[in-house]
Image (cartoon, rainbow, N blue to C red):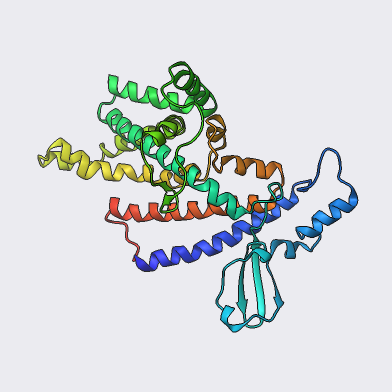
Length: 351
């Protein structure tokens, strides 16, 4: 198991490099540049801006994968930390060569902030919202799917699948404003917009002060975002469990006289959850890295809008940073999913 985890983490480096190359090529292939305006800037200003952000350099230098010979004191030979004058590049030293990879420096649009500043300020909020939305999805989706499968073609089945169809059919762009108007404006139960307490955080994203003053802001966006995911989980759980309970080993377990509760919990449920766990990895990565519509509807200062506006603004450092961030979450989430497989199905081994 340990070797498998180490091997997957090493693959993460390869995945990030490939993703960065593809992303870099695509964003430079799109027509236009980060400083193009409806009214063109004077040539001398464009020249200064391109020189400031190295956009006048060859494409390899812009990517940042290059080496130059420098004199660095021996005490810095093992330093991998970025510095302000290096524009927050990942750097390392090999012999007398000073290597740089990727530029996560100042945003082209928010020039007073770097990509690291954006992540530090906005990512914890998106992670809080994503974790709560995934919790809502699991609390609603799993019981609904299990009950619908065990009570097939009954009122419980029809009710659970009706909720699932509603969650799939009504997107957040519709459900969010309705919740804001009904529960935030008309009834006044929750604040219509905004977010709860901010730093200090525990583990980098969990607020220290978790009380009603925090959750009253989070309930509506978490439910609006999690309802659609809960519908997917409920439908997949129902379909998978219906297939498993018809297998021969389930009939054998019942024939041996096991109680129905043990048959479901010990034999059927674990195998039926494998397809559900599979989708939780990408779902988790998508939720915790920001959702544009939800954050815009409820006025949440998260990462969602940076995912979208960085593309329309040709903000290359923010595009690269957010894409690589999503890739990291996706690879790690899929690794956790693979480890859960071994728990759900004893036949799966990673020796």
